Image: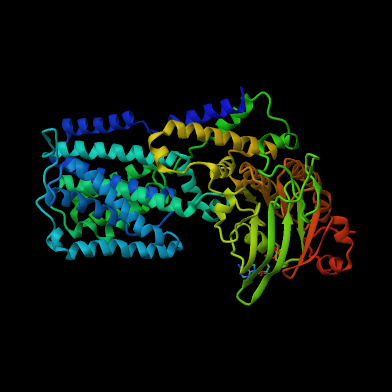
Length: 638
Ligand SMILES: Nc1ncnc2c1ncn2[C@@H]1O[C@H](COP(=O)(O)OP(=O)(O)OP(=O)(O)O)[C@@H](O)[C@H]1O
């Protein structure tokens, strides 16, 4: 069996435990209504509608907060906009309830874009404050706007009707609420299980890394905010459908706080958890009505007990990747793994668009394939006169550098020389104060990190940055999405296609892990790996992006000599496919063995450029760099 088949099987096994099929979820909802009809009183049915409304709200907030990690303290605003829009459609415009639902969703989505675009760039604490303001703003507008009845509220709301079937009784309203809850479950699960859901989780856990692997984090955050808001609008419509009147007291700040508790206590990102927590939050106080005086006390104790007993939530989020056992089984069933790391590099790294490497100096050169090439094509990377100042400190001072395709250029220099700042200026993390960075002649100086990544620049970090909440396999898989279509439409309406593509991404990640010898660790968390292995995962993550420029910041740190030799072979093999490599390294033997050219930085300036042998023989380099050795460095280098 090929790795593809075994992985796909293990993923399908996991998939069966997650209900995204409309029929299955709708069936469960209808069964619930049938039970209520058979055994529930009007009172119980009304409580059940409250649970369903809360659950839809919780599911919507789960997209925003559970999936994407955005602390929205004013989520009740979406509920209010949805409910008021639905009510206005019925009371003032005479529109049918079922026509009002898409209008409510559209209006709420628009509000989400308008509020989300400027605010989702903010730090999480500021985001919390702004969203509180948004929630209060919506409530205050409703409280003072005569058109919606101001503080008196809007009434009487028409009873929904569909082809003559009126939703006037509690059980019929329960039918409507449960069906809409089923719709929300399907939407939220499909989003959560798609590549977008995984990208959201990556943002939640480390948005800096997510951006650096080519995912448009701002757009994805806005997507989560709007999608979550739209689900909140659905809850608003349910609320309007079962109410005689709505007024601003229905949408107070406390509701937003309670919903956050539902999502956190249910289990961030967990659909089943949110459903369970909604039941606890709405039904438990009703059950405790008989002990009126102690009701809140008992409820509070129950909530504290829940936090103590299940700190990750009632039903913690389940991984939607193969389990460790499934992966191990997949590996065991794979009779022949692909060829060892260094041998199959060229199979999956695409050749860069430039047919052959151009020389840094502009003179004729020889491509990795040995074909002579001419000078006119721009080098893959050209850094011209880049200066970066941090307040009064000049971290980079008029740096010039070129890296042709298929070449490995090493950057060396003492601590504080500006090496990492240079990487950050090239990758868009820091904007150069002056100067220009070009990729194949295109000016990328002012582009965001994800755009630069999408142009074929992959990097590793000086201190490894992996997403510890995700498995090793998922850490690599996420970077494969840098070339994926991240529109919501596919995730919602073509779940099978999305799943197939996801299988393909996971299999590519599997192969990349094989290249660095880490398939055994695929289902483990990065925190369980050695430092050297974490570096390898970063390398696999960079390579799955099929870069044309690979930037590695001290990739050999923590590796033993054999691992360094393997890394050198891997880098040479990668460069042989036409990839330009920028190698920041303190390890001189490795730089000497791997690099075609070395650039020495000192105090932000280029001190020398040449072959490793030339550069390391220069007295000023020995003085500036080797003279400043730290205890961490290698033995004295020649
Ligand atoms: N975000 C920042 N704000 C202020 N100063 C910074 C920032 N980043 C780097 N610097 C400063 O810029 C200078 C260059 O730092 P940089 O990290 O680029 O050096 P380096 O060559 O990578 O050093 P090392 O080998 O120790 O990582 C240092 O003086 C550092 O303190």
